[in-house]
Amino acid sequence: MGSKTRINSVVLFLLLFGVLIPFESSAQTTFEQLRSRFDEGQIFKAQFSHTYLDSYTEESTTSDGQIWINAVGYRLESEPQVIVVDGTLSQVYDGSRNRVIISDYEADEDDFAPSRMLSGIDETYTSSESDLENGNVLITLETDDDFAAFITVEIEVDANFIPIKITAYDIADNIISTIFESGEFIAEDESVFEFTHPEDAEIVDMRY
Image (cartoon, rainbow, N blue to C red; front, side, top):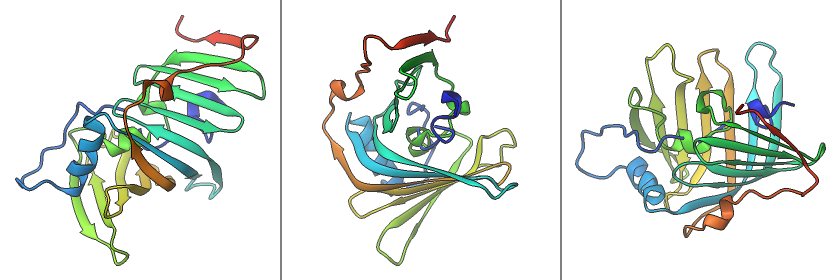
């Protein structure tokens, strides 16, 4: 499948942290506390299971692997692909073809943009929170913008502000969900986002 749709097409959650959603309360919300960890340079690391459900065909596509998310991008490893996004550039290594695709990053075309969803996406979204029976908090982001990629985004966070699940609903009622396991925040580490590939790999540069 094409690199443009990112493994599932490999969405989610994932890249414009400079855009803030205004909050009326002076108390820091769960969402704000979650975002502050990224603002401090921490990296969220987890195993993930990602599912895209097509509302029209009712067909679903699932992928899994490991992901690292920082304030501006992410690294995703899901055999046979490795994807590194820094917010402006996308680099994808396809091990099955021993090929690297380099392109300008277009967040609106990325199904798998967890960092974008964790950031609140943009200022047209409003945020609300509710307590779940399991002790977690559900953060709901909603927009009335007809041109928005996602109408509603739900982020489930545990008591330690660790993301557990992100579910996004687009304008066509397709459902994009990512479940995180063994999630943790680690200290900033530039090596995590270094992109390496075999020397004999074919390089396809889409920027020109």
